[in-house]
Length: 127
Picture 1 (cartoon, rainbow, N blue to C red):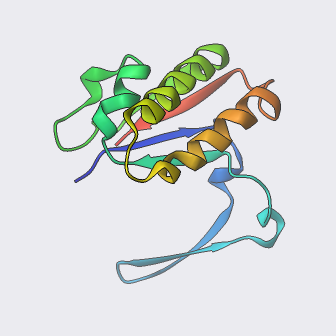
Picture 2: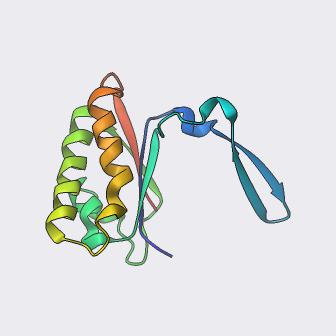
């Protein structure tokens, strides 16, 4: 079990980006040709990092000690941008040994302000 945070555009290309081949219990994900090179509209942060995402989004109740509770929340655009900025700033302030670990989140944050500025809300998931 682990703490994972996901933020994504609802009904975005993330839901159709891959073909899945399943053999027994093994799944192989193959990116569809038309989505290669297209920025991801679903990104993850794997790890607890002092609970920064729970705190930034006011979702401490989603913290189930060893992982998130699997809940999905819909957050209005402006609030999501503000809260994600808070989490990024806190991560940088804490000076974690691997500062690149949050790069996908930082890139998504920048896209939120320009590429996704007309997106009404975002989904966040604590798993």
